[in-house]
Image 1: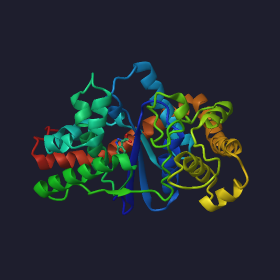
Image 2: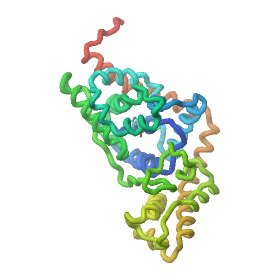
Image 3: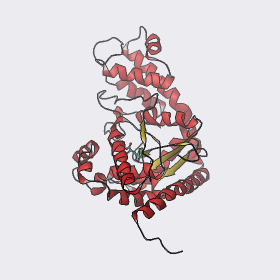
Image 4: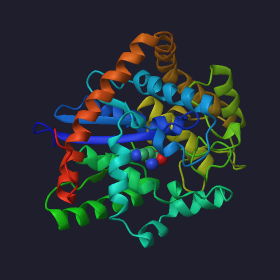
Length: 336
Ligand code: TRP
């Protein structure tokens, strides 16, 4: 709670180009949430998390800045919400260290994302990857967040955050707000266009599997044309037809229509026409965002100012919690 208002915090890693899945499943919900009155929102560009996987420094820097511009282009108001770079607020790394000492090896060993990532990056199973959830706990607890909108894949990390917070509070009294997960109204789970049983992911090596937010019209239409469906030849919304269902989900998320309304729109169409229709809906949805992005990308001074002001704002809240934690733990205060 800040000033009697509920606090919400979420973030994305500053790795790669975010996809239509990140946008419809997360970002768009954040925008809706941040329009609600009486809720304080923090959105992180989680670049400390990004280096758990090796990054090319030049691309990394570009991606992080691009992500900030995409947050704003998507509709997050950086004057109203606090949109900050995790690496600009040293308290994240500091609290993560402290919380590491209140987290057990066994707990981290159970994390399914760690197991998946360790298998994928077998040549670089670093300890940062192992303690990744502790840094995420620090992100959340520093701001005393009440609500954390996350997808299914991050639920386990949120659970461990709650466990760490409760453990710490159990020893030292009420230091941290114990956060709740928040599943958005829309909560669209967008699947890969190449394999509709898999989530659309920005780290997918197959470029045709994902729509990236800055893809141009031709690229978007081409990717939809190639989207994997089935050989039934009829349009229906069903678990047995994951490819078609995914196309309908995308259409509904872009047009704010219900499945029934969508099916009415698609009445009498073949798969080719359906794909074209969905592709156009996506192009229309992304066009204003892309136009705003282009404007922002030209305005370096504005972006720099936003970055600086928001880092200061985030630091203010984060340091407040960190000071309290250090005092409780028993660190010696530096004499003034
Ligand atoms: N781990 C999250 C992801 O990959 C990103 C993240 C980092 C995050 N810190 C967070 C999300 C704090 C919510 C709250 O999606």
